Length: 116
Image 1 (cartoon, rainbow, N blue to C red):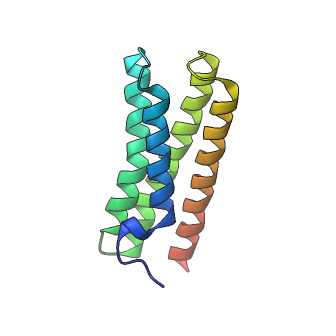
Image 2 (tube, rainbow, N blue to C red):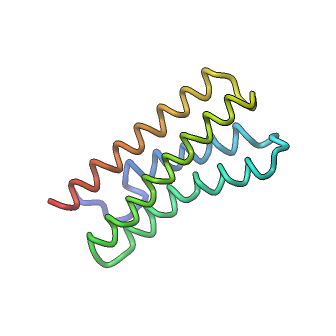
Image 3 (cartoon, rainbow, N blue to C red):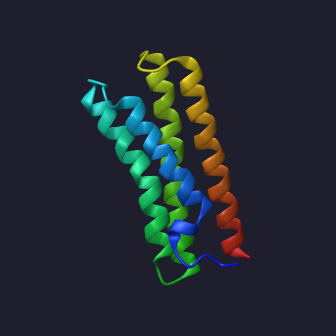
């Protein structure tokens, strides 16, 4: 079955969970530059999936998924920074990085599917 809206896509649902986690994890973080950057990167994952789905072609959707995939890498990296700066404990950071990696891999699979 083909998705009729971006809300039906598992990659979008996972991105939504990642954004929720980011906001929960850093709501009280006083490093505003860090917090704004990780919030923006997380939102970029969701927005690029939604925008790409709403475009006219598979090629454009593929391009936006690639951008979302890059934003996953950015969020994953920021969780290393959060751990190093002791904004979060190691277990939480590790869990979040695994979720980002899963999302990145899921996006890559969707991109392969679009090319076939």
